[in-house]
Length: 199
Length: 299
Image (cartoon, rainbow over all chains, first blue to last red; front, top):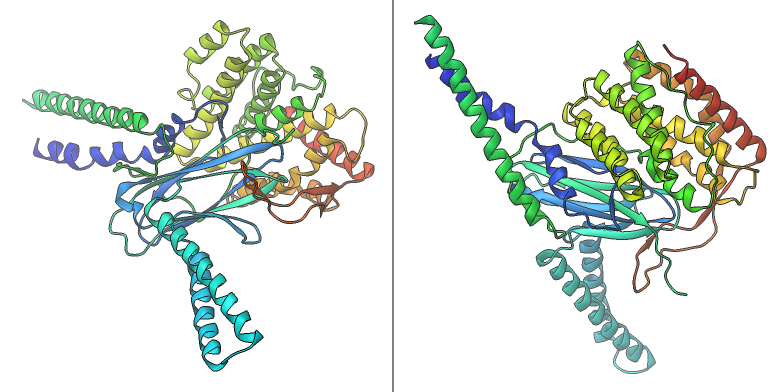
């Protein structure tokens, strides 16, 4: 009898729980509102620390698309998501993307370089030119920093777009090594007939 | 005493199963209410199979037919797959389920209510045969019958039946069957699409749409390659060799540059045009017809 109870306590919960990452998508699906409709290319899966996946979806010309993401709270902080085309051009990233971080670092280095150049030049047209570049760069850095903060603290959890052509898009999903938890991540794809803008 | 022990086990088993199911259901409903926005975080302790490293998805057949219908193509009912009473081999059941699902999507896109009902029954019985009886419940058929004049309901019910089949196969980790169904569905969709093109014209929207299927074909092949050790799948891959060669003759050229961001929409990719000759189109049509006929004649 003791053995039976042990089986029920330890095996059953795992058997039942072992079905749920696809149900996760079902939960997300309920949020789709007309005229958007569910796209069967949606996918959810189970993620642990260090796990990464690439989801290739085909987006057709003539439709608008929306990809929304849902993550278990246990791994949310450690989840990285980006959308690129096959050449690697990035269109969306959850949080601050590595590309944007690199871009910001490069701008900061360039600013230091320009400031050093300015010190060496006393007067003249060149100095005015460098001053203007420094000011422009400062504005750009401030904007990038603001964007990075927004991305970090108020991340946009969906990407809405219109493909100019029928194309393959790659959704990159990964969970950092530092994550201690594990859970599901869902990429919900929905689409609708493309609306024409303008007259 | 032994009998009592035996019964106690089953009673306990029933109680725990019921409790677990009830608790899971409660969890789902709370989450679905919370999920009306595009929020990212949710509490879930669910555990299932890890997502593969690379996944290649193929759009459902209804995506193509929606676009074809909008372009003003006329409906033809002589291109539907004939209703065959039974398929013996599992591979032929899988491929032909895809074929019928594509036919159903085509019928629903063109608001053919009576015929949709017939093909829906076929899709349902073939899903049942493949052990997917819970994917398409009899209540879906009843709903379809009750909404025989409502186009939106027809599309909704028929699309959901396809999505449910996919979901069931994903839940059970049956990727091989899923790949076969998708393959059958894609071949039938292409067969219908090429036959709806009245007169070849390279610039025709539907000819361009068919040419762009080269991208989907690539995903389809990558998907099949994952299961290439299975005999039925490797046969399918070999069957596709001529089609692959034909599609290589279709070239893409960019006609507009750069990604544009306007005030309302983010546009991704570059506007492009496919170069496809009449000969290539005809070869594609004849190869697709050959592949499709092979499938529907399977036993």
